[in-house]
Length: 318
Image 1 (tube, rainbow, N blue to C red):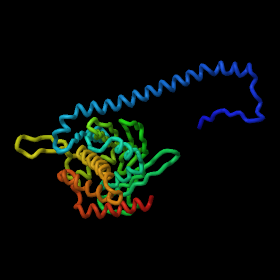
Image 2: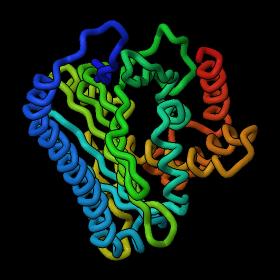
Image 3: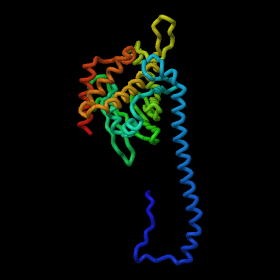
Image 4: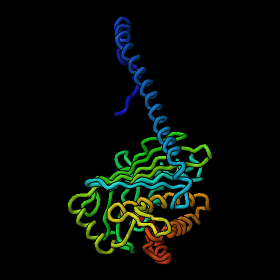
């Protein structure tokens, strides 16, 4: 409901002077209270935004040694958790892209479809507006081109919860997903960095029920057997490191794939528009091949052929 100002119309009875003074006298304290509350809420909101930006900058300072030297050979820190019925992955990363460019690109829901389609299992994505709320309908499938009616849809709400000249926070949330999964969250927050770049935090998580657990265990016992994540569990001097496997390995691989998709999309914005799709596809695949032990699934030609078909379909149905 919108608040409309009172406008006197000709022919309306005017209030008596005594009544208007009495009404104003009673209304004035309420008006002052409303103004005070509004001003206070603005201050609290600003303090909240500053605290959030400060928290992320504190995390940057805390992780500085790990960002400078790590197994990724780039300024990335990855962490994962396996709870009783939930998987969670977090990536913190420094990128060279100017913060304002990153913020403008990532607060636009349509741009997220260009990001998500880079992932192997994302087959289609459409942004829409429903009752004033932004939505992303994402279709998930196999590592081959599939018709839309064979895919599993996930409907994400899209909420840029904060966006200031120095900080932004975006949340994609879905109540349900395929194979007994639910409560999907893809959250991206970022803060400007004094070097001129951007410090990102990506959180990816979802919950699963008993049927989801059985499906995951079946996958890990068959085609997912031998797959690992990025967390090193054991590395004696002069030996090949061991990596986390199982369900934590799954969430670490997908968190990294989503981060590399964001990175490839942002880098492509520096190219002419006609070259951007090819550049981000090439970069995403090349970046995943740097971590071949964890992320290799398809040969380059197969990936590019599949994604060009899916991208063309996505744009034709918008």
